[in-house]
Image (spheres, helix red, strand yellow):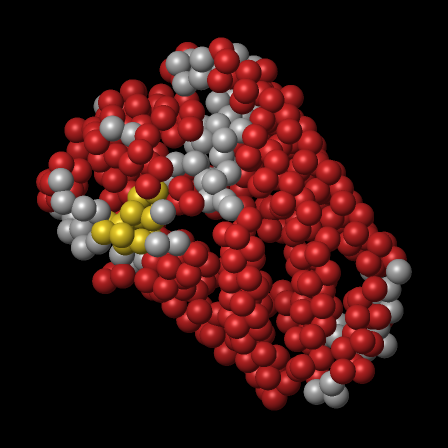
Amino acid sequence: MFQFTIIVILAVFILDITLSTLNYKHRNQPIPENVSDVYNEEDYKTWLEYTMEVFKISIITKIFSTVVLILFLLFDVFPKLAQVTEGISSDPIIQTLLFFGLYLFINYVLGIGFSLYRTFNIEERYGFNKTTVKTFILDQIKSVILTITLGGGLLYLLLYLYQKFGKESLFYAWLIIVGLILLINILYTKVIIKIFNKLTPLPDGELYEKSKALAKGMGYEIKKISIVDASKRSSRLNAFFSGFGKFKSIILYDTLLEKCSTDEIISVLAHEIGHAKHKDVLRNFFIAIVQMAGYIAILSFFLSSTTFATAFGFSDIHLGFALILFGILFEPIGILIKIPLSALSRKAEYKADACAAEAGYKDAMISALKVLAKENFVNLTPHPLIVKLTYSHPPVSQRIDALTKDN
């Protein structure tokens, strides 16, 4: 079992590196004609340089994280962490929480340098980073607090149920996780985003009036359009739709408003309304419910197998390590599951784009896609295999091609 786990880790690593390399080597392919005007010669040269730097740091990060994980397994770091936690508390639940906490802390310390370098070196030099050191530190603190309160609280509850009811608790665990996913969807824009960013209503003016007219024309009632101060961290552009039912919300980045014309912004808004009309968030919610049921069913095997535990230096089943090992061994299956889900997501993007075209904003949507591509340094020539395996959005040229052909 030990050898099998190492093989899985190396196989995933090799696949990841291979796909990244394929995509990187594909960067010099001819740019499709319909997006040939996105970058001028100088901008394209800069994009190539940026791509090269991001590729290098991502490869180094992957190598480092893979080597660390294998060393952890080879030198029985996980059993040693368990021994440390057993010396702190006699409560099995507290021991597991401390075990996870120590593991996450070590990973955080080992990985923070890469995050700092990418944010304050690469992203800074290419004009994307707007994050100050103070904001970066505050974000880290807030993330840690959220992880401890939400993640730690959820894990404590699940461990308590498992300790009390055994395998019978897994059904209740599924219900609790489904409830949490639902709660996050409901509270995302009302609470979670506001922990990190400031949201302001779209002000009165031409954009507001056109937004109302657009929504009325598309037969969709807009209750809330908010602007998020994304520019405090990055210059990248984006917009998204979240929630469902009475909790639906459309969020526009303030950078989008700065870089795009009114019609381009309206086309993006029409795209997001398209997601709402097609109930894409609700669909993703139900997919997550089914996925979670499958994950928990497989996890039950790891939680009851002493073979896995003894193969890695434990004398008996350790719930914390079982969860970590499940994450490692399930990764190849996760890659396979992602393929049809990514295809479904790309199809939804085409349909949302079509909504913008049907609303009379085809040209503006095409123009907006080009602005987004340029400002976000989008890869205009991704490798087709990487698109099929991992892309949640179709390449820009294919989205424009679909808009041109279908309308």
